[in-house]
Structure formats: structure tokens, C-alpha cells
Image (cartoon, rainbow, N blue to C red; front, top):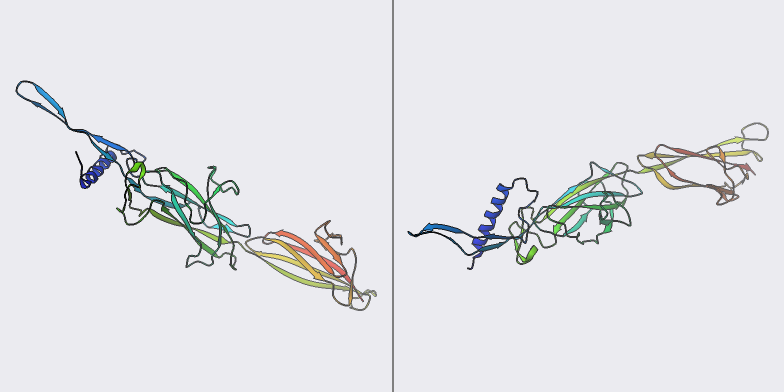
Length: 327
């Protein structure tokens, strides 16, 4: 017996409705699993005057088609701090369809209405299931690539790794959008991809259009450095006059403001013309530094001084001093 397509669709909708009402606690997002065969046989009992007879009809089979649906949700509770070390945004991809499906992912960091556009370093998924991004462990998804197949009603945690770009100010925000589209296809709900569903049936676009997106927000944590330089003069007669033979002690105060730290901070200063550097006079926060290169943070000599302050947190400062003799 040949069943036409309209009748087949009608029976499928009936079967899904019955399943939903009979088993209201079922966890499936879109009902019966794609590729399932629903079997049905009718029976009749009657009396023919001599005996009671029972007969059965032919069996009618319905292959359940795949529904393509997806939901994307940011997993970050609020703004994620982005500094010179970068930042990671987390998104959960949920296959709300009824069959296994991979989803193509795209990231847009250049949305209008925010303060700056960060750069996207890479996209990866939580391959070890620990809920946090592990560089070199979690598997990278190429640009425009797809996730592995996600089972019906299952989820996959995806990480968007970002870095500072442009010249944002401290506290500026940036929105980043992650979009997931069913690998089989998307479009208006009800769109059919013949023969492309799980188990060889059709794939039908669901109410989500087989596409969804969500946004995460980054907040720039930027540190700014200010340098304030001063000098004290001590002459050989006990005064403070800049005369030949007097000692000039320079102080350089490096201060960090803003909400973020700075890294790789190196302060240098040439020895002024008309003066001679006093060997062994270089200090950092009152502690002596050697003039040699490589044995501590500083170095000094006839050409000038240099001190590597490294990473300094917001609100902190460092003071460098050195002395010269006026020629």
C-alpha cells in the first residue's frame, strides 16, 4: 500500500502529538528521534453469525524526519575583562532538534553600538569537558568551520578567545556575537532538505530557522603609565647650586593608573650632556642596583640608565634614582 506525502506528514504530526501528551516528562527537545520508524497496524473484531472473527490490516511505517533546531546562549555572568593577556568568552550550543547535527560557527567582533572592536584569536570547543578553556588542549574550530555532531537535546561548550585591538580606553566595552547554523541547512521554518536527515529521512527546518546567535561583552582593562622626574642638587660647599663638581640626583617616579596592569615596562634615561654618571648610584625603590647588564633589573653607564620594571598593577608606582656630577 502506497502512502502519499500529505498523509505521511499528517500521521507524523499526530504521532508526535500523541507522544508529547502521553509522555510529558520526556527530555527530548523535538519529540521522537530522527530516523525512528513508527509502526502501526489496525485491527477489527466482528461476528459473522457463526463465530467471532479478528482481522488485522497491513502495517504502515512512518520514518520520522529530522527537525533542525539550535539555541545559542552566552555562559558569562557579566562583562568579561579584556587586558593585554586576552580574554575568553564562553557560549553553549544546544541542539534542540531531534537528530544529531553539526553546526557551522561564525564570530562577529565588529558590532555597531559598542566602544571598540577586539580581535578574535581562535574558536575552540571544550574537548575535555572541564568547563574552562585550556590552550593547546581544547580543539580549535577553523574559521567558518563546524562543531562535531551534537546529539539531540545535548550541548557543546564553545570558547571565543579574544585579544585587545585598536586603542580602547579603560572601561570601554565591546560586544562579540557567536552564530550557529545547522550544517545541513537553514531557512524558513518548514524548509525541507530531502533525504538529508538522520536515518535517510528528510531534514526539516524548525522554529529556530536552524540558526541562532548570542552575544558576550568584553570590558577593556587598560593601565596607563605616567613618569614624573625631579632633581636634587648638592654642591661641594654644602649648598644646592648647580656648579661644576656638584652632584645632581635624579628621581623618576613611574605610576600606573586605570583598572589594568601594564607589562614589560622599561624606564630609560640618557646621561645629560655636561655631566658624568656616578657609578653605583642607580637605585630602585631605595635598593641599590648594579651597573652591569643582566644581573638585576637595572644597568647604568656613561650613556645612560635603564631599569626593567616588568609588570605593575594599577595603583602601584616605582621610584628610580641615579646621580651625576656636573662637569
